[in-house]
Image (cartoon, rainbow, N blue to C red; front, side, top):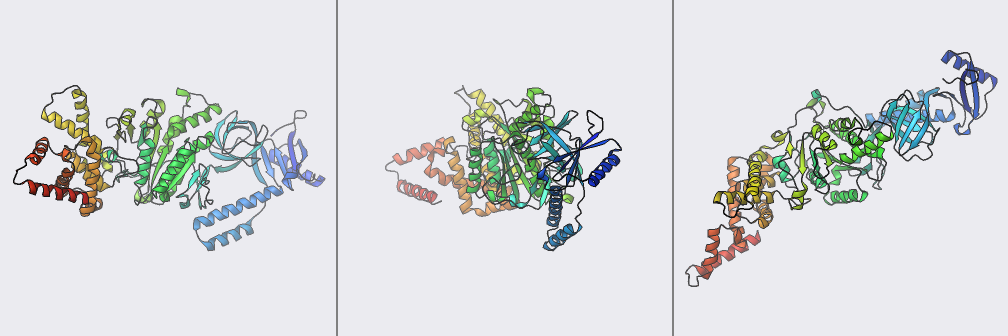
Length: 632
């Protein structure tokens, strides 16, 4: 209500195309007197052709709409609601019935709404006066059609973030609430597409059809609705699957400096989900458009885009879109999770997400705290990552696994945002710059990395095969430091260093080459079983690939048994070790440097004995063995 300054009467504005006659004016006056229990009413008439006909009555921040444009909007909203209802029922017969019923039962009523006015606008932020009944997260619409979301409610007014450029929004522009929470349309049609934070395609393809709408912010599932994490989410990366296993429904942080391979781990994990009934969603927050395009091309090249949706909010997008992108992606993931499917979401990265939120908060006038972040920055990420879970069977049994990425500065994991996210997640994979530059890729620091789910999300085969891997690596690192300046080492120490170097080489893995479960198990059994200890470090990767090819071609039944049973029996382990010995015997004929020293000496001496009676037969044996190995 807004009394005039001169008389103190209740002042109202009547917008119309044609001025009202005396009878209409009397009805409006009577309506206001009864509505506000005031007898002193003044009505100011304003001609406004844009409403096409009828009347709009405004009293302060309240508005009553009897206009032609208002009736059209009411009818469109009723049809849209009927269409959504029909889509949920998924029946062509229901669609026609519901639409006919919507048209038949439609009644034009005075649409009562609250109107606010823009105080300031800029940098994607709008401060509004007059919207006293909106709620946090509600969509508001400006008079030029631009939409925004309520982000701040104070005694001084309402703050909203814009999903588009400001355009013609200026001081005094009208804005109304919609009563709807911000959300995105969701459907299976998002798979194989590249979309923005609002769910609109940016890959140049057809518009995405959807039959459901989900708010971008939803409460996390309660404890009763969850079940424990026990099904592995295999990354195909040996260093991770063997020592820091990730389960479906887990939140595992990938953390490290810039350019240490964080995105590469996430990408390999997506590639490894092919054929495993797992939907993947990659969220690019504040990334360069060229970087995202390269990633999409990699997914296409490996035929992984068919089960993946890429949601992009690049560095060129305004901060509000970068802020809502991970929440929108999680809503899309929840659509699949509640249908009983498993989902993997990559948030790349939440450091830039926190920076975007900091920019919004400072522009909205919130008090800065540590490192200028607002006080609720912990809640920003906790309410996002808590939505990752594994639902109980009663709720469908679906899951969302989250792999958030955090970028550190000079390896400082004790900074504000890294410590926040570490305390929210179920473990972290720490990538170290020094290891990366030494050529150890993935550059996983075994000491600082951890999975708090651990063996609960690991197959029996992997548990048995990994065995003493972490202990062997820890002893190797410690021994390497103490012996780097020593020249005279005993045999046990020498063997331990050789074994450690072999294991470090085995953990190296090229990009885009995730390993299957059987390949990982065979590699670990041979490596931890010290079968490759005499292989020079520069030959370890070649020997490993040849070994896996040997099993794939000649002993496929071993691989199939491991992949099928996901277990490693003692007999199977002995078989793998025996077959590895057979392979190495053939491999040594082409690479004699892998033989122990005494055998190398024998191999070097024998050819020099010109009159040796077994010379010809030895040459024949070596030649045939070499040819055999090449054929393999």
